[in-house]
Image (cartoon, rainbow, N blue to C red; front, side):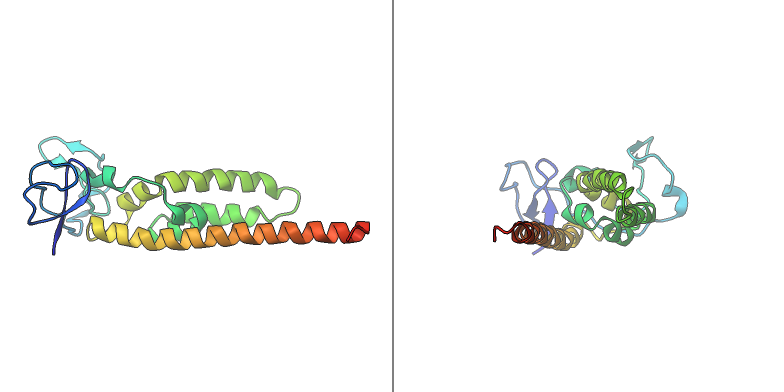
Length: 184
């Protein structure tokens, strides 16, 4: 069964529906179709309404009118920032986050790099979906959501593993300190 996107609430509804079952608005528009960019002219044009043409194309070919439907937190962009950035055709972000991650391991001077990296990772978590939609071509909204769902799963799994590893590390350090002090 093919799906359409309701322009009022942004939820997926069956094409056969006369009204959106979520918000009740009249028949949803046809599902967004993916088409490769026609020519490099679209690159560098401002995003938004173009005089006499509707919306200017994004470099990826994705419909900029659907940007409001891709907003939200992106766990993949937050947790595994540099890998996510490279896979979403954002090499500047990828190189920057990789270098910040490596620099944060330098003894004594690494802490400020960690803070900068954390700040940028939070920014990517907030704006990651929008950046992905603007930069990487998708076959439609459902393809975008399916792709980012995989990134979300891996991001959450790795985030939880990091928290558990941190707790184990702190517990082991406290037990070692107690043993050295003779309390254990």
